[in-house]
Image 1 (cartoon, one colour):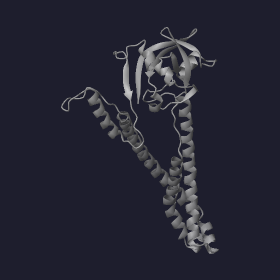
Image 2 (spheres, helix red, strand yellow):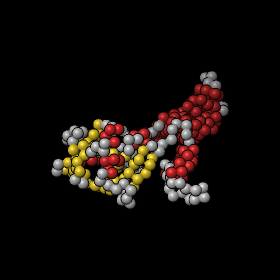
Image 3 (tube, helix red, strand yellow):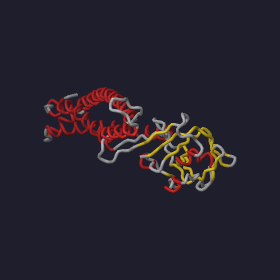
Length: 309
């Protein structure tokens, strides 16, 4: 459990350098247990620093780049609204987030330190208690427990409406999950049309290949080649054609993910599952599209095939 309070925006200064429109946060000692973050340099507050309301601060990577472009920031003093704070840590760069919760342009101080300068119960700050369930505890069970605890603290009767709100991360994740499900479905539909067109293309290529190599097939069969050998030969050819196309597609997608990561700082990647799925789909389309031409080639009469022009 952790108390987290959003402070009014401020300008952070170090000597003659400024970082403007910086978001401030005051947090309790349990913040690392709730929020997943990494420190590029330094450390988090100690328990004594939090209890004693020490003037210590952890800054985001953007603030570090603005105030300390070429020097080590730890133990340097920065100024926030005329008050001095000692830098003890720097958050690792996270990049932009769809939910807007990046720590790149944020400074974090202890709650007791902030209480000396800001009325934490005023309308200018947004305070919340953040709670994370233990392993094996469902969100619904935790929510029900919290409702009971809050009603007890607020001394609400069973018939009274709650005068508090419980927000869950699922409130944001569920709509996003639905959105990505629709996008995923659309991708599969478009992909199926592409597969259908590609399948007909492979089948056409294989029919042309069989026609052009009819005499060669006749010679092979006259020399003792079995029907299954001719069938497998053309099936393998169809599969190889599909695998080449699949490899081009995978390389194209991989290139796109690299470009997106580089220019938009969004962590996209091509997973092993995606690669395996692409290979399996390519092999399947090769077998389906190439079977009829391959079967036709395997059933050719050797005499008639040799006479073909």
